[in-house]
Amino acid sequence: MNQTGLAILCGGLVAGTIDIGAAALISHLNPAVILHAIASGVLGKASFVDGASAAWLGLALQWAMSLLIAGIFVTAATRMAWLRRRWLPAGLAYGVAVYAVMNYVVVPLSAAPFKAPAAPMPVALNLLAMLLFGLIVAFFARTVAARAN
Image 1: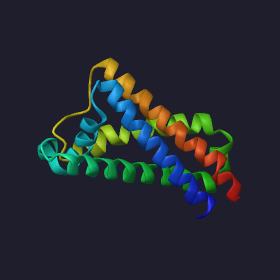
Image 2: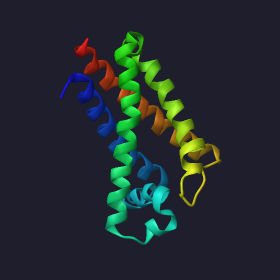
Image 3: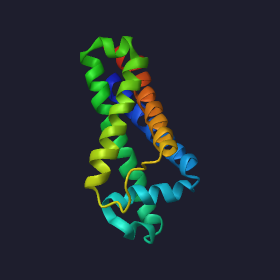
């Protein structure tokens, strides 16, 4: 695997896995419930009664989305060196973009039976989680993809 692929794989899987934990902490729910909620984007309400298979689907979907999100940033970072040099602000900005796309495009277009939170505290906590997500992806883009150039 080349350095760019390694950055995508590491950044996506680490950020995606930590994101599950962050969602569990924010919502005070078991990570399995978070995985069912992710699967509900495809299965709707049925994901909450489908047992372990729905949780595994949620994990697969989370990691697939995380790899795609990481792939976009890492690919851009291999073409625009300033994204690697200024990885902290770039990662934070990317986290905001990911938050907006996920909450205002992806989730509303999915079969998930819930809406993005509107109360200030959940919004702030979810935004913080996406800022961390963006920083993790940018960190791996900087440290791993930079070696490819």
